[in-house]
Image (cartoon, rainbow, N blue to C red; front, side, top):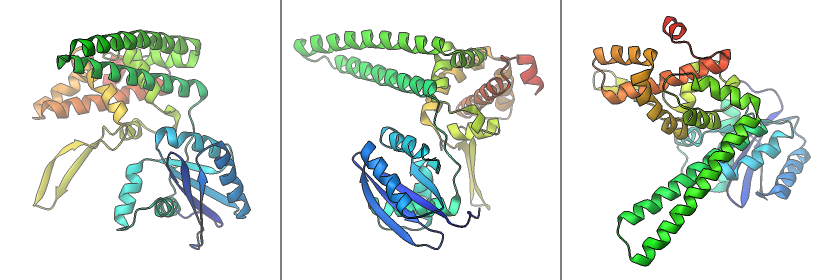
Amino acid sequence: MTKPSGCAALGIDVSKRKVDVALLYPDQRLHSSVFPNDAKGHKRLVAWVKKRGVDQVHVCIEATGVYSLPLALALYQTGYKLSVVNPLRIYGFRKSEMSRNKTDKEDAYLIARFCLLHDPRAWTPLDESRQELRDLHRHLETLKKARQQHLNRLEGKPSKWMQDSLKRTVRHFDREIRRHQERVEEHCTQHDDLQRQRELMFSISGIGMVTATALLAELPDIRQFQSARQLAAYAGVTPTQRQSGSSLSGKSRMSKMGSPRLRRILYMPAVAALRWNPVVKDLAERLKARGKCSMVIIGAVMRKLLHLVYGVLKSGKPFDPAHAQAA
């Protein structure tokens, strides 16, 4: 896509303590600098860009979670077009350019070139209530993971003193997990839009309230997707094929080029839906008749569940098996 005249690309490589930036003009002129990755540094970065006298700026950064989100929010407030892209896209672009050097400064320049050439779509932050739900849910996941790690260490039959310490820590995690689960529930019930979307997903056979809450926490605003297929691609559950002439004819596989969190959330509901959801059971039977293996069927069911989620959230109507089968 041709970018508007005078529109420069600002590539930003984010690390814990600093951000390296590269401002690349369409005529390939380049300015670069480094700023602290904190609130003051973000303000200095914006002022630096304004001093360059650019009419339009398209900012591009990689999605690096806690390190990139505060910067992304600060830049979003400036009104610049901002794209937060999957690091896999930048990695693929690096390989396509056969780039041999990897420094923070070079990475910023690479991201700017990617932005200028590919014009990635604009990013919109989650609203405050959804962001809070995401933070709560991810911390709950962290607590559960840490609890399981301590239980695993108990299986190794450590010394009596260590066993007592591990058991005390597990009890602490149990208390924190209960408190956190209560807070998640309270947060959802306090926001009518979150509660309504949760109930819509819960109406789908195979998706329980815990899964509906987890999906709600990890899904972006459904309005940014033009189709259920786009949502499935975002989660990385679309199939990918490997075929070339007569020498390569591999089996189709799940792409996994998307959100691993969503794929983890969808796996067990897919297993449950095989038993309880008539639409999913019908799909599974057709695939089994075609000789597909169990893992391929599970992947297809995960994708189908996301299509159903997209449908109920987009329409605002609960799941109707008869309507879904007719569609």
